[in-house]
Length: 512
Image 1 (cartoon, rainbow, N blue to C red):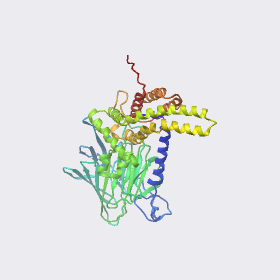
Image 2: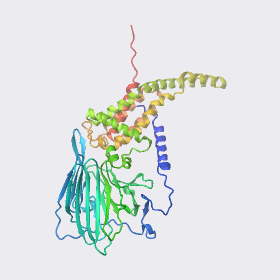
Image 3: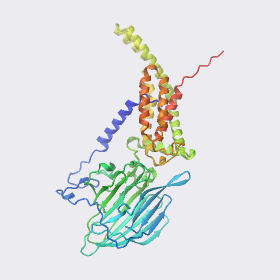
Image 4: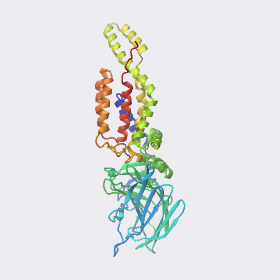
């Protein structure tokens, strides 16, 4: 892949993309400022009637005289293992079954450690003492679903939670019924934490929610204001690099306000605040808890596909490239080899154009020499100079054809970058002995070093007036690749090696 002229178009494309997203994709709705709209953000302030009530992020648990011994209930599907507990009647552990080499690699995204009950998923809290001890009332197993029903009593009344785990996808349906005691008013709040994968270092967590247009938007967890909240969202939760924990349906208007509690770089707790009630009331909600895989996300809520990082006009191309990558993996059984096969295929498609481009670049170099000659020869004869320039351009062309392969591969690079950096398929996917995770950086910087060497060799084959700029490009891309995933670095390296191979001069064979 020829990258000597990539920096300027890369910068321009990046700036154009930012402009489109800022001025078009994120343009706010022109609704009435006093109207409450689902997904509308607010900041809790005492003087505002709609936000006078402070955000309630704390949980007061009902005191227990003796330590509780949890009774665990496991629900296993082809996709995951769900572990529910009678302590808080919540989901204590979620284990994703990642299909890998014909087997399953188990990845935990939710583990309530050290009895930290506030980090269990779907914990229901109240302003008065929140019950800790639930009783499993029923378990109903069907072909496509498993239902668990938990019940508990507390000072303000009783609560029943019914979980429905879908066997064919990552959707969890929750039915909540709260029956306050006579004369009591209760306000339920539902808590569930962000995904957290042990061993995934420095993986920041992001908040996700719908905006006023019902489109998914994201915000960095550490950038959220302490008193920031959202009115009645229909989608609300969190994501990390590979997983999503989010509410995706609120048909009975349980969620009046939603906000977050930030517990550190890798922990963000979602809080869904319900209405204040004085009589028995039931609500249904649905959640997605699973990997950031296109098919899995779209099967539950198409809005979640944006969490893949495939956005804008290049999103369809990113999906196609991921499908092709998985196709090659199906037969090669190694994602590193699949990336090489994909890169070779893409470069073979543009190979005829690349050869013509190289020929055109040689003509351009010759054109520059002849232009310099005629400018010197006819410097005192403007008419003759213009005539000779026109004749040279007619004979050699303008030289723009040499950029065509790069222009074709440029959108491919932009579309493939999020695929090779954030696709869960590449998480802990090994390539060779020193690269055991294609989604992470090369631990020994072998690929970046080879990229620099390949660029330098390519510069030596270039015209003398192009060598200095190509050497600068070699250092720039070498430095950039040290922070890229090993998969993306591998893609760049194979492209550069193919370009280098194309430009090696062929030996002329003398015929006797």
